[in-house]
Amino acid sequence: MDHAGRASIHTVSEETQPVDDKAHIRDELDFSKAEWITSTDDDDEPGVEIAFVDGYIGMRNGADPEGPVLVFTPEEWDAFVAGAKDGEFDEP
Image (cartoon, rainbow, N blue to C red):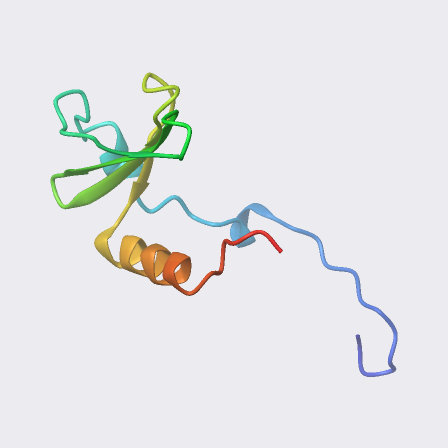
């Protein structure tokens, strides 16, 4: 809302887009030889896999191990784990 109580319209520009602060390291991380830790659901289907490489944490879909790897800093990983423990990602 603006000062007169009217709704204001905001546009998204490149300057306001989230910055991939790991872009500089992403191609240098070698997850090919990483030891992936696998979670499984009750049906024994592959779930999420994580690996620790060069001070970063990688997460991928265990059903698609050749697919993309999400890369987290230790601080991001700690925040993610804390959120999961607090139920932030639970279905309603």
